[in-house]
Amino acid sequence: MRHGRIQGHGQKRFIGVSQRALDGLGQAQALSWKDPFSKAGFGKVFASCLDRSQKTALLACPGKKPIVDSRLNEICMG
Image (cartoon, rainbow, N blue to C red; front, side, top):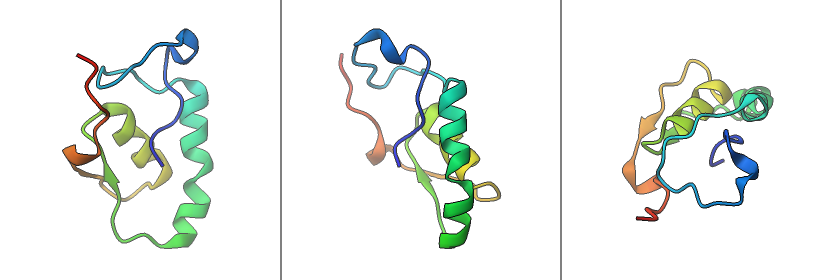
């Protein structure tokens, strides 16, 4: 999973590495994975350096601290 929907989603622009927060739907999307992911029994959870990715991981996998790995970052658009 990448991350839930973010603020400004419908603007038809590349967001890249800019810090955009999850919107209400994005938070709900992340929470919808909580039960299936808890049943999967993941030992570790990884996220990019972006706040939206880490917030998605925290909502989808409560009790697991995401391991932040810059190799998962979005591409930089300049």
